[in-house]
Image (tube, rainbow, N blue to C red; front, side):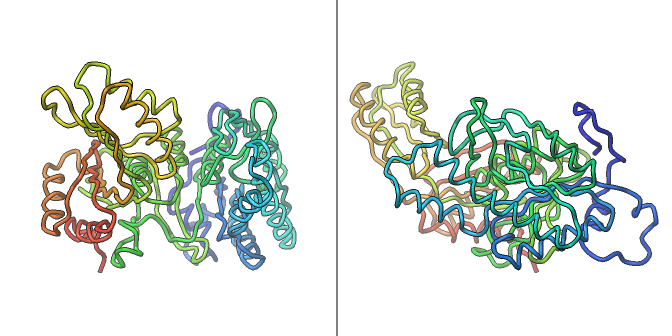
Length: 444
């Protein structure tokens, strides 16, 4: 993929997956066609907190960048704060202040990335690689004014491009920008992934490599199922469903951005440097696996408003009130009306449960419902696969597998390529293991 046609830059052509992987993996092997040595690729490489967690790790990343550059590629780096530094800064803020204004929190948290990018530049200079560090605002990230969870409005990478044009390596602090009213903003947890993808799009990079502490995207959590396999290639839609239902990496917002703008992703390890998982557009002529992955998520709770009058507009009022309270609702089930009343169940993130219960309690009185109850010991288990569109029976197999395990299903939701069930939290890992086996996803 060449430079983006709207940014006025040119590029020497799209690189194949093989050449990109080859050029960024390590020493050149004999027998590669000479043309590969003359192709210049532009790669955005993002390194997470564990990948730059101490001086040795920072030097290791710098050496990897040196290899990539020696093999004829231009590189833009995006770095997260070192190790658990963001957590340390958050604890420090709690020790100092009970108010913690959003503007000042963003100024504090983004200091972690500034520290990491400066140290990375120093390590690159030691390898005779000229490098310049850039904050999010210097790199051209313009965001809205939502502190601690800002969203990107525009990327103006003029200074980053100028550094590339003069043979320097730009090192950008992840997860940060500047708002339209000129305040420093933080993109939220996992925001460095989004920074890297947005920068890759703005620069027209050939690929965005997301380096982390795992070797790619797996068919399920290998800590739960040791036979889980690394997926070689997956579509944007499948990975987006996975990240929305419990897969922790990469960040869901970065996958959304990549899908919208067609940015090829390579999720790989910063510790083994091996080939990881490529994420790209779905190829319509390719036979898709019926199920690609099984995920689980224990971050949500279930709420039920019981005895709701079965009248037009009541459901709209319930979910409008929750939305105005800033509560993001996921799965929704409304029971069949009996004697003019019904029950409405839905899931919300744990951190919003108290607020949702307060809002729901007040609302239930106003609309004449009989009460509100919650259950915070649930889990969402999902099966995901692009092949589900053309292969019937996935839901039946999932329900039969859970029934054979004696796992009760509390709620069900579906999309074109996903089926999700809410189950008891203490049965979630058992359900994942059984589904992974049932759909033939286990490795050797």
